[in-house]
Amino acid sequence: MDASIPAALVSRIRGLKSFDPDTTATHASTGAIIWLTGLSGSGKTTIATELANALRRERSGVCVLDGDELRRGVNSDLGFSPEDRTENVRRVAELAKLLAGEGLIVIAALISPFQKDRSNARAIARTAEVDFIEVYLNCPVDVCEHRDPKGLYKRARTGSLVAFTGIDSGYEVPQEPEIVLFTGVQSAGESRAVLLEFLHDRLTRI
Image (cartoon, rainbow, N blue to C red):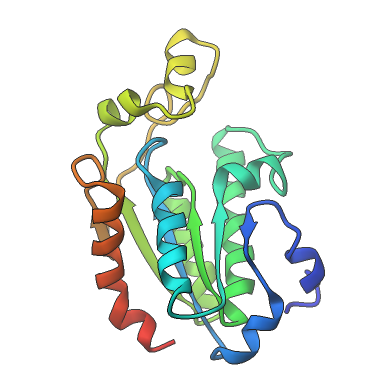
């Protein structure tokens, strides 16, 4: 583990689920970053959790970095200005790179609305020769708003929540993701199955 982030500390970071530093011993020198991006309500957390559970049935060393949880912990000092959004993505990418560099499969689930920030996350992974797999959860904003599992769209519509992605802050559709999941019409289980099938060949090399 990188000396700047002791393994004992990393294992306690909020947003990092089921990470056991000892599991890295059985893995190759590098893992992979599976980066889920999409609007709030598109299914990122649900699919990340289901994907992690499915992968853990075949291998150890899988962890989830959930954007909402990280914002309550490691990134609690950041707001939602364009600059803070950029820094939020950068920090998550750097953490994911360190973990993947130890052989873990890292599933990062965060809106990451700007193309330049997602491109930077990919570049950060590349510095460690870590495989970066961008997964775009394509779900129309009206469907996401209808789901509204956290009541965020309602707050954004009433003005009590500002700079909310999809309402008064933009989301830039990924230009060249490795895979697109149409979560507006697929169930979480169907999306997970499609993603698992896609990942099969990529992850067997790790």
